Image (cartoon, rainbow, N blue to C red):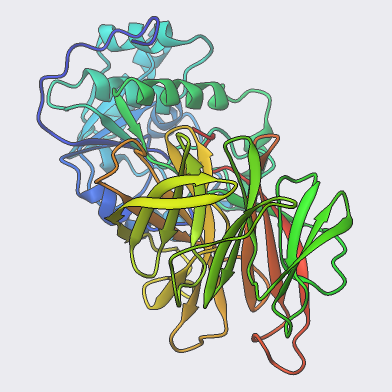
Length: 479
């Protein structure tokens, strides 16, 4: 139990979801509306944003800002809001037919609430129970956000079962390519870095801890693209650069677009070539760095830099995803929806068990970027973060087979071998026609992605290829 938090034992049967107001890039509406109880924050709108945040609302947690507006004591800056929300900003009718709970409790707030009820007689706002208020303040210090109050309210709601789902929350928006809230535009971005904000990152770490106890389920948010790093590593025209870390002490790349030869570098010096090889991937396992050769007709693994090449028992397999978890080698094939597990030593590979995986495709708010009608293919090795593995793949469309759309993939609940679901989210704001991801790292709290880009379609006569590095800020802290 989190020290200071005192939620009562769960006795309800309803699936409860707390919906945050972070600026999301993905359509979460159907997922949210599948809940029995949906708790929203302040006057966060649903009309016009149904695909993003759903339409169902059973409860709202409101704070002093909403009450001051309804009491006629504060005006709304419409210029900071997105259309279509501008027409219905701070509409008091959001508290006419659902249970609204006031999270603030002092004499001034009670006075404002009386004024608001006089102006809008249909307002239905109740006070937050004292037990919930004590839990909000005792779990952690600082001025609590309405989001923290909403989470603690859900944990105390008798009808809710555990875990309570937390969706569309983020630690903060400062320095990211997102707006203050999903219904705000860039004019309110100044709020993200203002000194008077609630301790959003600290609160998010509280939600993480609650998730680790099983009280909540913190639904993962894909990272935000921050910027492209100008330079990578000089490979003399090489493709699909894979390295062991952002420092690039050990790297491998395909020599060029015509020759299937992998070149291995240590500290920038060539130490080895692997013939009849393609799409190298480097991953850490049992104290050493291994490289997978993803040649369509000849897959192999070798210990870097000089280990013996070990052939894998696959033929006509493309872009297998390797990762190491609990001392075991895992190989994921997204196209065949299979996951293998086995042992790996410098001289031997044995794949002992396999399991079918289900793939859940999450859609983007960008209608021109989707994964539903394309071939999901691998990219980077899996990156282990807590009890989950994350990576970046790419998809080739049937209509445009040589144009790739990169995507995040993630498997949670790693300990449950027989119940594997691969969640995927498209990455829609890349500039070039082809992005072929090859390595993913964590660096100072951010994701760093290595990828080969192309100026236009693959294998076109005028196509130019170049290796790039991208930095992503996590939509949610790494768990």
